[in-house]
Structure formats: C-alpha cells, structure tokens
Length: 116
Image 1: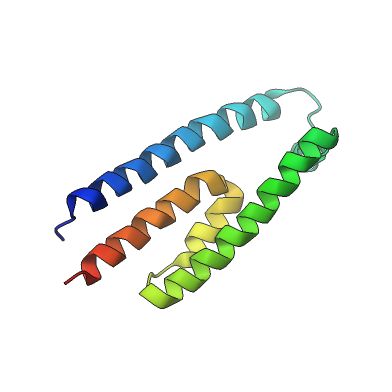
Image 2 (image 1 turned 90 degrees about the horizontal axis):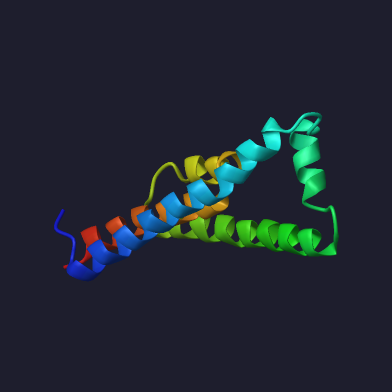
C-alpha cells in the first residue's frame, strides 16, 4: 500500500502517542504493583478514587474509554476493520491511551487503501 505523505505523518504521530502512553501509564502501573500491600487490582481502582481530583480523572478516563469503544466499533463496522475486539480488550488490559491510537493507525491504513 502506498501511503500519502499526510497518511504516513498521521500514522507516525499515532504510533508515537501510543509509545509515549505506554511508558507514561506502565511506569506508574509497575510502581504501584511493586508497593507492599497494594491491594491488587481492587487497590488500583480504589486508588483512582482516593480523592475528588483522582475520582474526576478516573471518571473522565472511563467515560472517554467508553466513547472510544463506541467509535472503534462503529468505525470498524463502517470500514471493515477486523478484530476490533482485540483493541477493546487490550484497552482495558494495557491502556486505552495506547490502544486507541493503534486503532487509529488501522483506521488510517484502511482509509488510505480505499483512496482512489
């Protein structure tokens, strides 16, 4: 497939965002899970509601993740992108800030392939 210059730039930006997001999220995730008596996954979620600011950010992230999930399903159906479930499941396992840009790469590649 021949990507346009703007398509290449957009895909590169999405991949860069995904890499930065992976480092930014998992560096703290690993720090949390290395803490003694961290409470595991329940403790992790509980930490997201430790104070009103954390709760606001947690709720914002959950609702943004829900909107991204709806977008991924509708766009995958519209454009014929396969395996959308992988992006959704890995959004919960890895981070939505990682998987959504990777989905956007798949979307851009599909749009570029359909370009006359």
